[in-house]
Image (cartoon, rainbow, N blue to C red):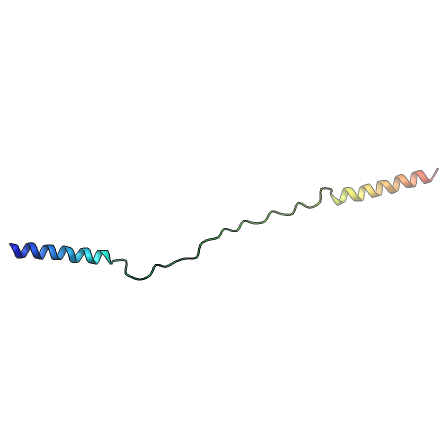
Length: 70
């Protein structure tokens, strides 16, 4: 009976020893950190549309032509 108890205890220690080393003894694998890059916002551009600038210049030319006719 004493031999059976000793054998069972040694078998339990051996199994727990294998379970403790189940992951292996190699170094940890360090992965590079993930860096989230946020997209840059689009440039705001000009506050006045080029179409309005052209229309303004044309209107100024028409007004100047109308004033010069007098």
